[in-house]
Length: 204
Ligand SMILES: [Fe+2]
Image (cartoon, rainbow, N blue to C red; front, side, top):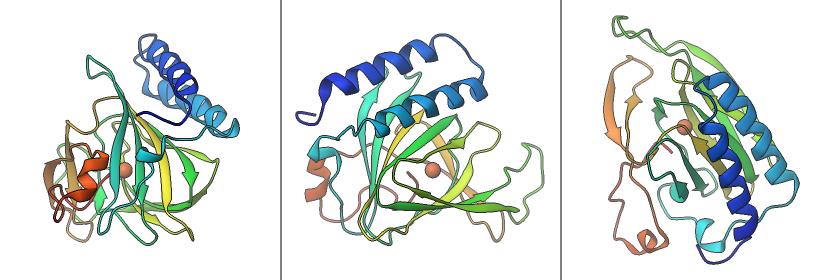
């Protein structure tokens, strides 16, 4: 990424990297990452323009950093107005800061590993505005859908405890509890020129 504020981004990456190597406690990791994200947004950090481009038909997930050992990653996720995800898991911890627009998050209870397939149980909704940070997930509590509800494209800065573009995650039908595994992949500005979505038109 060539523009934006690379020095500030590097500082953030160094801070998260130190944090990730200091503990395995997902609640501590998410709480402290949320603080770092909140500071980043409060300081007026600006993304490089190529990491803020919308696409027709689906949201884009641009890598801002992927740890060499896959232990964590950072993304800008960009939805045009009205775009939404399917109900999905993350299978790791994560925190999200809203950079522009607004995000409606619809949460569900994560079924136990050995639970029979059954309709998902709703766990509430929340609307997140610019500057707000949410802990979207710990491995045991990580099912939601997201809708871009602002008047302008919704962009989130996301930090996850894995290479979120490469790990296997679940996409649910909340009405039945049936799910499918998927690997989301990563986008790049050149993805904008593809003819039609080559990646699942859902989770972030
Ligand atoms: Fe998500």
